[in-house]
Image (cartoon, rainbow, N blue to C red):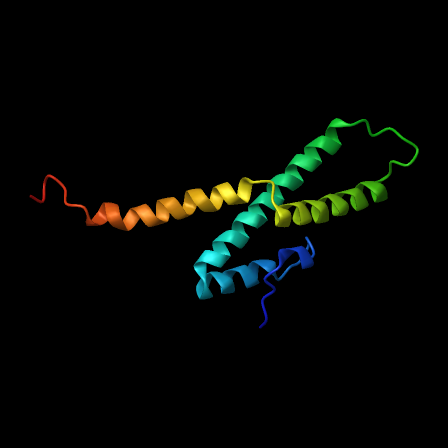
Length: 116
């Protein structure tokens, strides 16, 4: 099974993306962390775009269920592409999670007052 390293080439509605991410997490956790952070950033960006669309008036001649569906699909793909280039959220998540992961073993190795 080949795993695409570039999430920009994937569709936002890719059903196999979660399975590929699980496989990548077993093979190389650091790369999977970055990809999971990008996916979270894509979901966050999609929610932001959806909120912006909901805040605009929807009473035009071209507003129908079909245009809403295609606009939603466009927003999903746009948020996927934006997350690939990054708005900064994924970088902060990776930095925060790797600092906590790196600090955990050193804290456990430090002697406590009770053990002395």
